[in-house]
Image (cartoon, rainbow over the protein chains, first blue to last red):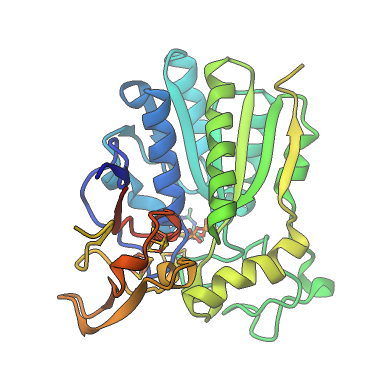
Length: 247
Length: 67
Ligand SMILES: Cc1ncc(C[n+]2csc(CCOP(=O)(O)OP(=O)(O)O)c2C)c(N)n1
Ligand code: SF4
Ligand code: SF4
Ligand code: SF4
């Protein structure tokens, strides 16, 4: 028998510290598979976020450098401009990218930085204990919105991918999910395409990944995966938001 | 040899593989691993078609699949 599925070559043997059922591990594996398939392990540089994925560098045999909260696009910009031959990606949560790092990501996209961003949207601040994120749904209960997010008081879930799509520097933006096999297969294709766009020196590329945080949703792993289909996707529909790669 | 091998020490017992398996080949063990998780196990290896769905959804990359 031949091995047809296992851990990507570019990843270390270290087990993940994530909670049971957390989507981060799936997103990590997809990045690992794409790096293996593109044969770019020795020239890839990752910039992990502040958030649950803060020690992501333990899990890859890939060069990585940590950035302050929300500032991965700025750090990635510096690295890519000094080393244009490297493949540079940022990995960011929705607290990291859509709250404290809003300015950095908008300007990196607008400048058309040749970087790839993997934006993990789990609709909550995971690491710090489940507080509301700008992406939290209207009515969603979090530790700081115990009665549910009240749009009148705190506004609406922010649609960063759609916002970045209107910048001239962004080439490819797609929203995917890692809650079930069919979506995971599509998510990998999108991540691969985003890296390829950087390899072709086209401009900024980003994949928003809807991901499950069962612990802070207060749901079982299965229910959290279903919640993405039944609830999160109503506000954040899956699909290609912008694709200028053929132009 | 089973077509699916689950590393019981890496598994956190989330059960996503069990729900994803179209052949109902997997189940949760009655025995805990050293971290205290009731890990997944291959209950009916003969039912497995190596479809990889369990591996695709496993957040901990605890599953190896052969064909
Ligand atoms: C400058 C700064 N402000 C605030 C924090 C506290 N903090 C750590 S992680 C985090 C939010 C993480 O949420 P998200 O980006 O959604 O990632 P997740 O943990 O859900 O993967 C915050 C606010 C910090 N570490 N640094
Ligand atoms: S708190 Fe949520 S995002 Fe963080 S590791 Fe746990 S499940 Fe994952
Ligand atoms: S490979 Fe497919 S059939 Fe086999 S255990 Fe996994 S999900 Fe079930
Ligand atoms: S999906 Fe992975 S971690 Fe979850 S129960 Fe199955 S083997 Fe264990």
